[in-house]
Each structure stands twice: as structure tokens, then as C-alpha cells.
Length: 262
Image 1: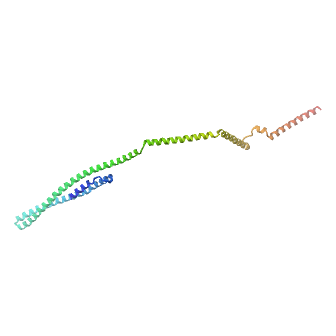
Image 2 (image 1 turned 180 degrees about the vertical axis):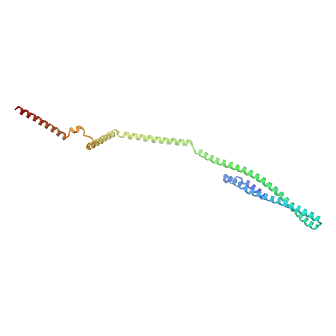
Image 3 (image 1 turned 30 degrees about the vertical axis):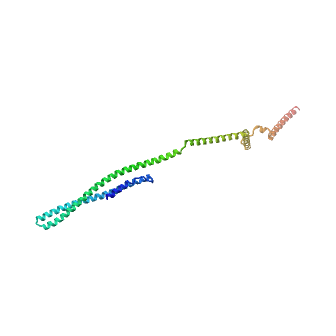
């Protein structure tokens, strides 16, 4: 049983070899395998210890039986019953043989138990060391992967090419901007803005006159005095009426004077 146990341990430790497979996955699997060995090892040690305890009980049982048989033989001899003493003597002889065998087995079981504890202690120490190494290797692998990605990024980052592209794009944009500004200046130069402003002002004045005319027609604003005196038929009629009334008054005065003289 212990030979198989030792072979299993050797086989386990011999599994840490290089392979064409992913080392990261192998190390992770090895960590799991090492941790899984502890419950099985504890079970095996418990079996060895149980066997040792059982043998210890057998030794005590045979020692007790030998003691009892010896006392019975002595009692039979004292009672002059050699026939009974002979029967107990045969049982005593068999008990001694059984005790000797049990002691030999117990000694082997105790040695096996001590060896199992030492093997477990060594295994746990080696397991912890290998797991620690595996974890450090995994962390180093993760750092290496990250460093590899950074290195790839740095290798793909070409400063000269970037600067060249950057300057080229700036020149293109500046050239395009200059062309558009020149086109705008040429377009403005080709347009008679002064005439357009005059026409716009004339339109504004015309609109103001129309609004003023609407207000006048609606009675919102009185017509200017010039418009009343010039070109107005009503104004001419009023002047003529005033002149005729003055003539009538003057004629009445002259007639009165003539009557007074006569």
C-alpha cells in the first residue's frame, strides 16, 4: 500500500515537465492536483492509524488472555488437576503465538504510521513550495503578457510616421482654409455691394412711405400742411368763399355811405 502511495507521489512530482501545451494551464492544473492530493493522503493515513490502533487492542487482549490463562493453570496445578492445567497450557501457547504475531504487526503499523506522517509533512512542504512557485510563475506570465502587449503597441507606434502624417494633415487643412478664404474674397469683390445697399435703402424708404400713407388714410396721422394748401380743391373753395364774403361786407359799407350823403 505504501509503495503505491510513494509511486503516486513520485508520479505527481514527475508531472512537472515541459510540454508543447500551454504552460499556464498546466501550472494551474498542477496546483489543483496538488491540493486534491491532501484529502486522499489524509484518508490513507487514517487507514494506517486505524490498523495500528486495532493491533494495539489485539496485543492488549492477548496479554490479558495470557495473564488469565497463566492464573488458571496455576490454580489447576494447585488443585491437582493436571488435565485441566494441560488444556489451559495449550490455549496459553496459542495466545503467546498470537501475541507475538500481533506485536510484530503493531511494530510495522507504528512504523508505517510514523512514515506516513513524515511523508505527509514532506508532501505538504513540497506542495506549498511548488504551489508558491507556480503562483509566482503565473504572476510573472501575466506581467509578461502585459509587457508583451505594451511592447507590441510601442513597436507599432512610429513617431516619425505619425509626425509626417500630422504635418501633412495640417498642411492640407491650412491649404483648404486658404483656398476658401480666397474664394470668399473674390466673390465679395465681384459683387456690387454699394448698389445693393442703395437698393436696400430705397426699398426701406418706400416701405416707410407706404406705412405712413396707410396711417394717414386710417386717421392715425394728420396730413402735412403743404399737402392741405397745395393741390387741394377744398382749400381753394374756402379761399374763394372768404373773398366773396369780404366783398359783400365792403359793398354794404359803401352803400350805407352813399345813402347817408343823399
